[in-house]
Image 1 (tube, one colour):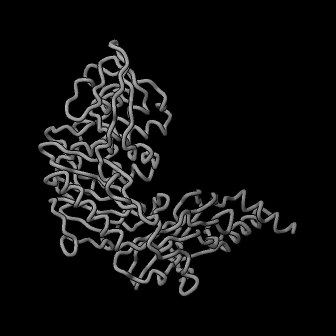
Image 2: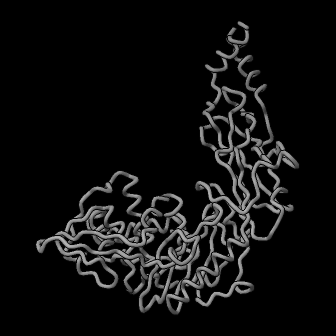
Image 3: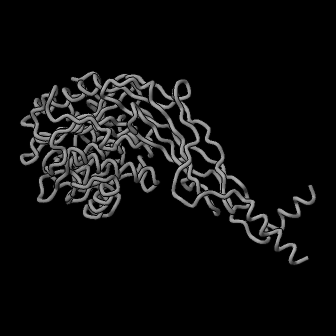
Amino acid sequence: MKKFLMWLFCLILLTQPVFAQSEKLIILNTNTGQDTDTGTGQNAGAGERNSSDTTENTDNVNTQQTGNVDISAPSALLMEASTGQVIYEKDADSKRPPASVTKVMTLLLIFDALQEGKIRLEDEVTTSEYAASMGGSQVFLEPGEVQTVETLIKCISVASGNDACVCMAEYICGNEQEFVNQMNERAKGLGMENTHFVNCNGLDADGHVTTARDIALMSRELINTYPQIFDYCNIWMEDITHTTKKGSTQFGLTNTNKMIRQYEYATGLKTGSTSQAKFCISATARKDDTDLIAVIMAADDSKARMRDAITLLNYGFGKCQKYQEDKVNKIPNVPVKHGVEKEVGAAQMETFSYVDVTGADLSTIKRNVKLKENVTAPVRQGDKIGEVIYSLNGKEIGKVDILATEDVEEISYGSAMKEAVRGWML
């Protein structure tokens, strides 16, 4: 009987699905015609953030150094916000001082802290002597003055208050230096390879540098992860109240970003200027649900800065058409080798989007599902077991991972016996 059971166990193992041990992929289906029309090509479509979009692949980026776009500033970049695709760049990786555009990262860390529950909008923050000593653009906070987190966010995003930045840095991290360390860590996590922050407000300092590309990356992270920033950076004028030992006084905040009044599609985001940085901006805009980010660095004056930003945004709105899948198609189960189950559930976890600036027919985008041949137990939920590859005119434009939707344990002697007994009883 024991020998028979051992023979039966071996037989079960041998009858499990067996595949070649190579790393090849099985192409399960190639969608063409009607089956490929799972998205829409249109001049529209900023959506949710898609972590697996691969349209940032430089092979698929149509960049322009000169041509039809006349940009006077020495460094510039235009990005589509939902996909991160670069539409135009000019010397976008040269390190330059960013002035108050630094505050995009400062605001990002503030909203991170709010999201994580470390702080609340209604929390009261006391101004330190050091915070009150900041020069440059400020809202003239006094030592000991108390303001709420939300008021300080307005002071930063509307009036570009250097003092307000330091107040929030000290409130979140205890001191500005630790906050700056976290700024640099956050930058590293976003792939901002040419950025180093020395302070949280953008005052000129040795080694405080970034690039047009890196500014676009942190701006994209801020507006996509925390779209509530638009509630603040679109305020044109608002009063705050200074309450000190001298009494209460009103102070008017006026937005430093004149584009929100002078360009009909403007939505934000942050300006900056110092003697070393000259005039910089990270300008966001939306038209027909398309969100763009235009970064200008080292423009000669504020008018040139705005002119360049508007030129880039108009160029982008004229060139962009977006493909957006309107649903996630069903993925068939994938065979599993040596598992207690013979197959595992699979799913494309998110939709795919792509921005084209070449005028291509996006209705011809093809979608191919490729699954791994050698999926072997144990399999864990979330393991990558394939990918969906998208192509246009024979060229890959992006892909999205296919993940296992459940666990499948490796078959054992005990599970084999249970399977055998169950088989006999049926």
